[in-house]
Each structure stands twice: as C-alpha cells, then as structure tokens.
Length: 255
Image 1 (tube, helix red, strand yellow):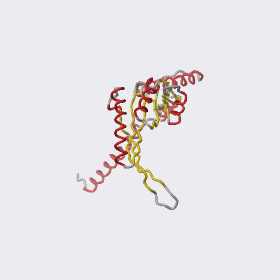
Image 2 (cartoon, rainbow, N blue to C red):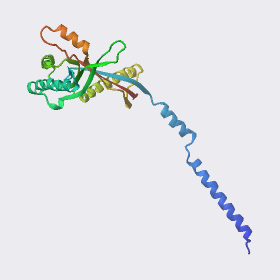
Image 3 (tube, rainbow, N blue to C red):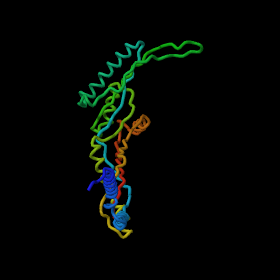
Image 4 (tube, rainbow, N blue to C red):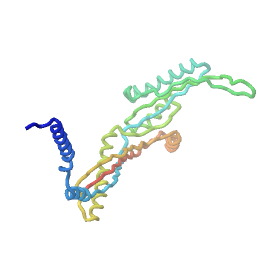
C-alpha cells in the first residue's frame, strides 16, 4: 500500500497544531480555580492593621559647652594691629593652657582678619585712619560650673569680644537611642489602647518608620550674656539648664 507524500505532510501539520494547542492550554490547567482565588482574597481581607505615631522626649543635663570669643586690637598700621593682637592672644593662651590645662584640640581659631577703619567727610573720599585686627576662637569646655570664672579670667587677659555660649552633649547617640525607646513605648501604648477598645489583641509589628531625632542646644547669645553679667555681683554666672532630645516613629501593628 502506498502512502502519498501529500498525505504525510497533512499528518505532520495536524500533529504540530495539536502540540501548540496543548502548550497554550497548560497555564489554564494549573491556574487556581474560583474557589481557591476567593479563599486567598478573604485571607488578605481578614488581616487587620493599626497605624500609630509615637513620640519620645528626654531631658538631660549638658556635659559640654562651646565658647566663642575674640580679641580685637587697633593700631595705626595693619602690621602694628596684627602684632598687638598676637601679643594679646598669647596672654589668652596662657589662661587656656597654663591655668585651665585645656587640650590643644579643644581650642580652635575660627576667624582672623585685619581691616582698615575709615572716616567719611562731606564731599570727600573715605580716609583710612587706623586698622583693626581681630581673632575669634572657639573653645570646647567641659567644666560647666567654672564657665563664669573662665570668662572673667579671659576678659582680664585681654578678651574684649564674647560672642556666646552653646551647651550640648557629647553622648548624643546614647541619648537618641533612649529617646527612640520612649517613642516606641509611646506608639505601643497607643496601639494597645486602640486594639483594646476594638476588642482585639495586638499580634506584632509589621512595619516601623523612624522620624527625625532632634537635640535642642541651649545658646547664650550676646544679649543673654549681658543679662547674666548684670545679674552677677562679682563674677559672671552662667547656668547650663537642660537639653531636650526628641524622637518620633510611625509604627504599623497587626491585630
């Protein structure tokens, strides 16, 4: 019996067509049916969440102060003003290093300049009459109860410009973690109260987003310094007060 080539080709085409149909039918065969899909959807819908925010605050005593002060000298020439400034600042260094035994890394020059002083007349060009040399220093100081005495000694040594004092802490990370603990406890208390009123119990934390940590330093500017001087009878009195450290979180709980 002879089979024609034409019939053999038709048979091959039919086999290939059946194979293609079978391949495209496989995903539909393994796709979950309507009952299974509904079960998954209902499980997701039954997951209840509570979103709350928490705030933590900590009040601490400062442990470091940053003092900014300067020495301004005046002379007829720029060189003379600069030399007078260097001579006066050597007395300041004796107070800082010889009397108060400060580490050199805690004393930093933050500014130095020499500028002409002008006089102005009617219909006349400005005229240089003298020169000012100024040097500004920032000191890191940790003996907070002695700040007033230090300022008095610096003034006696020639310092004639006190720009201000900023109180801060060198244990910032430690205190920020404590404030963060307080924020998380605050969020948990809120979530428990909400769940209790809803007749539910918390199952755990799903997500946490940390907000900003904030340390509010205490600053004495020039005006406050003047008020402190006026209130003192014999020596400058400076009170460090308290620092406020705050932290915030956003927490999502499941219940």
